[in-house]
Image (cartoon, rainbow, N blue to C red; front, side, top):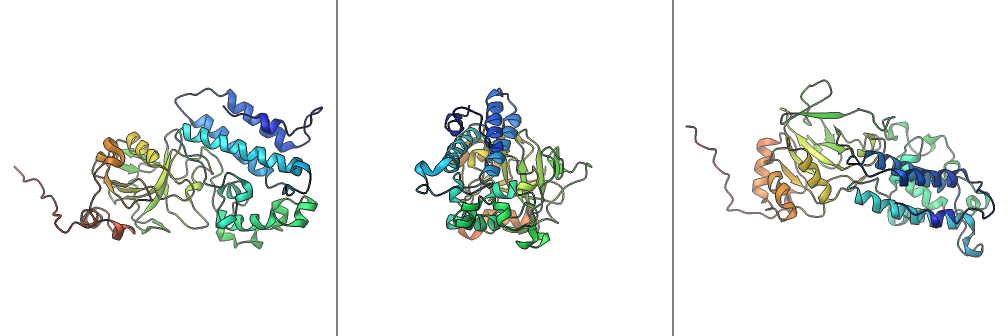
Length: 357
C-alpha cells in the first residue's frame, strides 16, 4: 500500500491541481492500492512501473527552484520532495514482491552526482538514449538558472533531435510491448531452446563485461526467461521487458548443446540480490545442480547450483583450479574475468569419472 498524503497535499486546497502529471500519478497510485496480492506479482509490477514512469516524466518536465528561492521551496520543489518520498515507498514494495526495478538514485536531484546513472531517464526518454549520458546532462539541467526561470523541460534543454547527443547506433532498443516475446527462451528438459524449439547457445553471443561466449538474461515477474547478447548503448538487460521489473537478471554461459553451465548476477541495470538469484535457480529446477553460480558480485565466490539452492551463501565456495577446469571443459570459449580473485588450492585434484561397469 502506497501513501499519497504528502503528494496529495501539494495540490490546491479548493480545486484539483492543474498538473496533468500529478493528477495522473495520484490516480495510478490509487489503482495500485486497489490491486490484490495474487501469487503472480506481474500486475503489481506493471503498475509500479507506470508510477515510476509518471514520476520520472514529472521530474523532467521542469526543474524545481532552489529551496531558498521561495518560502518552502515553492510548489514544484515540494512536489519533487513528495515524489522522492513516494519512490522510496515504491522501492520497498518492489523489495517485498521479491523483484528488482531499474537502478537509479531515488532522489531525482541526485542524478548525475558522483557520476550516478539513471536508467529511469533512459526508460522515459522516447529515444532511449543511454542512462549514463542522460544523467550527465540532467545534472547540468537541474542547476541551470535559465531552465529554472523559464520552466524548460529536460528534453527541450537537450535541444532535440536526439542525434545532438549521440549517434543513432547508440540508442538502446526497448522492445515495444512489455509482454513482447523477443529473446524468449524455454527449457526442453535440461536444454534451452528458442521459440522455434531450436537449441539456443551463447557460443555466438557476447557481453561487454565478460566477453565472448557469454549472454545476458532476465526473468520477468511472472517467470518468463529471456536471453541475448549485450551491446553497450544498443541492447541491455532493460531491452527485453521494455524497462519493466524483473525477478532475476545477470549473465550466463549456455553451451552448444543448450545446457546452462555458468550464471552470474552481473546486471548494472537491475543489480540483483543473492535472494533474487536463489529464487531463480529455485524456480528453474532444469538448471543442473552441477552448474556454477556467482550470486553476489561483491564477492568472487562461486558455488555449485545444487549446494547454493540448499544453503545459499553458506554453500561451499569453489577454488580457482576447480572453476578453471569447469570453464575449460564445459564452457567452450567463455572465460570468467574474476577468476584471479578466487582463492587457489594447489592440492585440488579433479574427481575421477565413475568407472564403467
